[in-house]
Length: 375
Image (tube, rainbow, N blue to C red; front, side, top):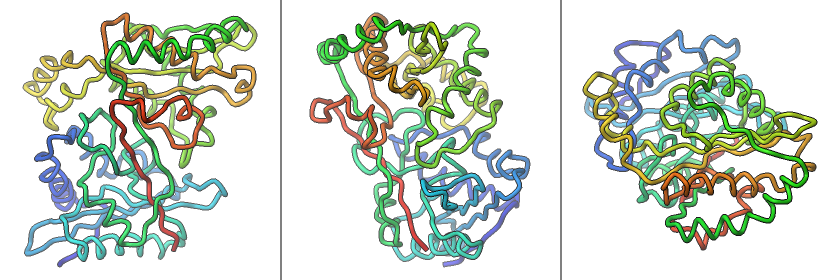
């Protein structure tokens, strides 16, 4: 096996991208990201590389001249664990089903991080949590959704045999059918009534002109998620650009702010229309034909994705029960739209929101894992 490392190189970057595209394009459960978007992430002017203290190194593994694996080591100066210890990451991982090759590839990336003084490594994680991270470790046969981790089934085992152990887990739960959704609505009704009786109310974002509300969401999200594992700052304009890319998945009443008459907006909830089939129809392209395929498939789903909910820490006590109240209101809106599937996406195991749901009652359960290695 031949191993090649590089930082920036146009020819090698092309080979690096193709190594992942070739495998993932054959996987019916994988949503290919637009090729120009991923190619941009390997270019020197991508914002991550301009931050002083950030660093990276890509590795390509070849067998008989053919790329069969890849990985990137990242140093993000702002990424730290709960104790404030710096954390390096490994991401962009792809590898054939060969443990020896995987071991050499992972060892090269981890060794690069060790040489830069890192003593803790998380993976898979590309740059930070605002990009792709985690492996799906259960439920991969279900219909995917945009932003869901997807990977070959042997990847978690390769990480474990290389010395990684699970450090954080998340789950997604799918609830299907009007009766199931109405049962959740009835379950959350008393808390919703109690919250509104205390003066709290909801304000929907303006989906026709959402820019100003996107900025309000930005200023609520970071403090609300300050204790989320690996949460780092993101520039306001980068966050707004992320939401703009998903604007087509907005629907009236599904993204809202929790408000209080004395304190204004103190929380938020965000649910999006499922655009999976439309994004899959792009086939990783952004040309005119791909965009037409997107338009033809964008209404092919009765599912919505419940992505985000949060409240400012200083209002968590006064807004007790807000998670149930926000879920109640969202589910009412979903049924009113004629949708009959809700996927509660990427809940971290052990947090309060996860406690609202009984996994045994869900129609599908999926699990995702972030791994750690101590050096």
